[in-house]
Image (tube, rainbow over all chains, first blue to last red):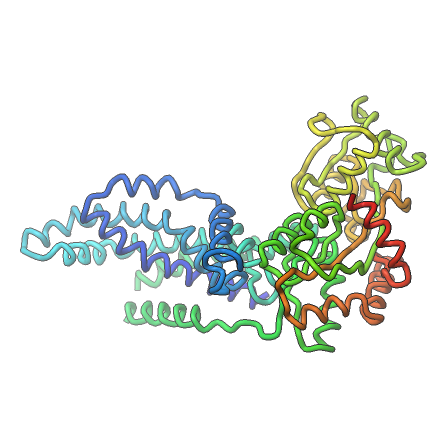
Length: 204
Length: 285
């Protein structure tokens, strides 16, 4: 049980981090080059079915597939990758809104004082730090609650790739609705808890 | 301070991503839900692990998906119960064993509006359900998910010369056996189930409206097969297939569920292999 919670936290936490690591530079480039249509593209993908992401990744990772030789299928790392891809549209779309506003407010001031564009973007990020972390918490919530990726590229293997959401699905499939509901409640509480923890950590 | 803390967390997460331990001495087995959900596979796996020090990891899916995973080489073994589907995938499979069997049961509301209890055989039972459905007196819930049970159900409709698809009383749930049974219970509908899942849920008090109305005839036989996927040479996986049909494995299968349910959930294949192979060939046609 505790193991399940810790594994879920770890998998979805790492996925969120990975997604942030590539989404932030992407958002910087989008703002710098004013690539509006790319933002619209990501906005449209925010609700992409998790099963679709799982299946597409499966088609890359299965042993007879292009990246099969990496041996990543049915590992926690595969779930991390899939969830990172899954939450990227949400991160890009929300980070863009936040950073764009801060850039117009503070970044352009930096520019008029002769700072570089990158410097301006960093200042914008610093000024909107709290909202930006809110986006990251949202991405974590989507990752920890998703089912399709974890089921398809994780495989729901007991003690190895079983996460809270796949355990909920399994209990439901077994007709153990009570256990599934309990786990679901814990998952929701955890997700809300992380959201608050981020805010509280910032207030101090 | 805050930034250092965040950076530290990030570092630890990324390092663990690379260093997360992989299970040693394990092999992947895709399996149909009924074997796993009843708990039988866990008992077999534990006995095997104690004896051989290797661990089967189960991917619990319907027979259709289990075979697809075998085709893709995503697993080393597959345990399924859908002879006609198995045949379609035969070019990817080898080392076929039959290790257990039991009987599907036709379950439905106690009141039995279709009169299934008086049917002389399973196809007649299905015909009665069809007629009662058309008359607006009965509902039938189908798995509709290409699982072994669903494939069996479709073959029974075919044997009866009927096609219920699209009829208003015929509901496809597209979900697993337990969910389908609970839906049937809530709708007071008929359905086809493997006996093990039904008994387990019945014992847990989840199916107050449903009873076994018809069972036991040879048309309702449910044969569990195991295969090794061509190209997978894992010695532990090969050993696990042998273990299922060993005296020890067969003993576990024969006794599993006796204490809990008052009757075994599965019958061992030992001693009946020739008959089972013949029935299997019949079903695979």
